[in-house]
Amino acid sequence: MKPLLVIDGDSLAHRAYHALPKTIKRAGGRPSGAIVGFTNFLTRLWDAEEPCAVVVGWDTLEIPTYRHEAFEGYQSGRVFDPALLEQLPLLPELVQALGFTVGKAPGYEADDFLAAAVAAAKEKRWPALVVTSDRDSFQLASRTVTILTPTRGVSELARIGPDEVRERYDVEPKQVPDFIALRGDPSDKLPGAPGIGPKGAAQLLREYGTLERALKAGRFAPIAEDLRLYRRIATLDASAPLSPLERQSPLWAEASRLLSDWGMNQMAERLAARAEPK
Image 1 (tube, rainbow, N blue to C red):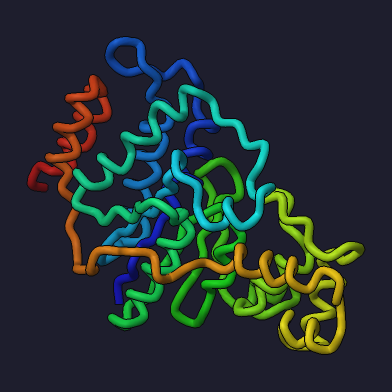
Image 2: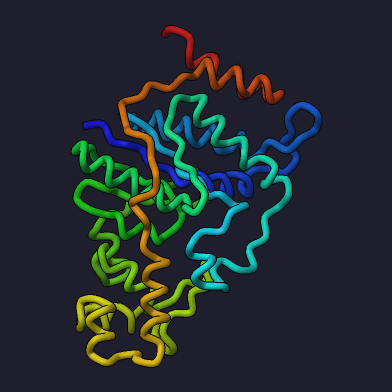
């Protein structure tokens, strides 16, 4: 059965931007490296995985989520190049022109749309491939859900299922939010429990099963509510508003016209060629 391809748009756009020369420009001398890299990666994924449909989730950078409001230090200190910020709003337009589903809404992160798409795929009994460099997504791994995470730029992907999550973290996928809450997450600025590293977090979860059971047993009493908050922040929100999923075929010609409008003629020609009958 063909899988649903679920992509963390921001994650891959960032990797594409940093993997390519900053000298790549479109008409008017405007930056386009992130657009080129993301488009190349998306077309390669379509060819390699032959999905039945594609969902791409996006952050809404200008509006804080409940995570930012609940924890002041969440993701603090992140700075993005202006050239990347200029290109990010264009990418959902490109995804939509291709006929794929865009997941983006105030108050939600790209990760939340990954969870929503996986939940929708399970309802349809579709397998799912989730493409992201964010390891929070390991909580989605299951018998029918595989995480594809870039290992070098955006050219190589590791496949992560439940066995690989156990191998890497020594916990079950469903325990990943508890694991993050205990261990902490430097990229999101979650401090975790003092003195608890990855091995300690895994050991606690083997002993208690869940963070909540550890807290009810009296562990970490002074910071129990903080740890519950960290777990909530690390848990992907599958209630993110996502359009109903249907099988899709790429609209290469429409995407080509959009790229041409942006002054990216070489990339437009490449997508136009895909639209021609073989």
